[in-house]
Length: 215
Image 1: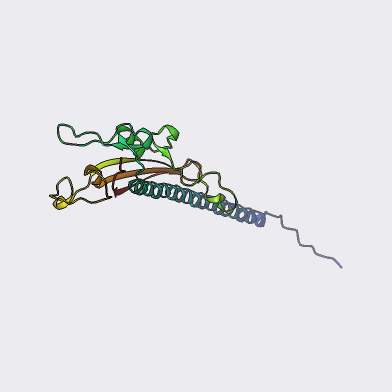
Image 2: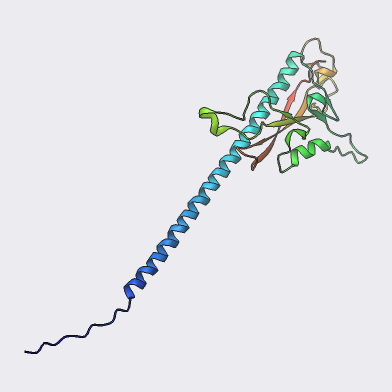
């Protein structure tokens, strides 16, 4: 009895090729997902860093506003001038021939600089609370640098048509002050702060009206 054998077909490797294609596709999908996750993490970290710098600058603003108000009510003087002096309070330049009042050059640089200027920026470090080198549960809110600030005396604030002593000539303010020391002044405070690193720098302003310190 004779047996008939079918010839074996040669293996072409089609299954292996398809498996390799799917492996490549899965690898690409994995790399894309990983890159997307890293990018999202960096974006989240940048946003958080940006918010930290904003909160640091806002904290300094509130502290300086309190200092101005406290100085006016406790006769703790500060002096505003062209160079800022020890009070870090600047005055705007006198009006030019066209009647335009320009900003002090130190103030302009402080407000407009994109990078962190360091301790030679013409401002002062916020001293009410330490916001750097925090530890424990506060460590994640620690800033790379202590916020810095300066302020400008923008002059006397008077209602329209008022005279130098106030509307209708009535004096206001603290008892025993001279007429000039009972005029409300507008102060523009500028604060700068970094986030957890110097990659994020925020500069914010506030306008605060108060009596000048009684000298």
